[in-house]
Image (tube, rainbow, N blue to C red; front, side, top):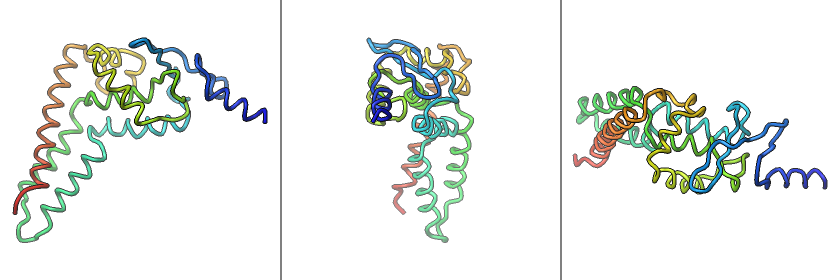
Length: 196
């Protein structure tokens, strides 16, 4: 019974989180009246949270998420569905777009997602990741234009390729990346819903 009380106390602590092996989550920053914590050693994040971090990091690294890849595959299936009407030009454009994405700077949404798994407030469990709660947290962060620059200049920036760029030029690169993403998405949708 004592074991369960100890686990319950660890899961419901409000201030500093002592999680396991004397690892402690420490205060990282404050935003809109909330204190956000993180684990100073990224390799000692609890498993549930770190598995989500790995999935989000893969999105950041590839510059696309699962939905984009599924749409890409579906569009390719449509293009190749009739051997007599295969559009090699469309296939080449889609392949070029997918390759081009890997060379883009990370999208701000990927950085926010990675930050949401890295930084947690006192109401969150350090052991797991609540997607619905973190979507709200990200929306709150997006209302503050300076928070993205903050994420690019903290220890967290070690996890982000391209984080050495200054705030002003980073914003310009992000705008270009988002415009390129918009063009890629538009082309995919055109292929998915093209009338044959």
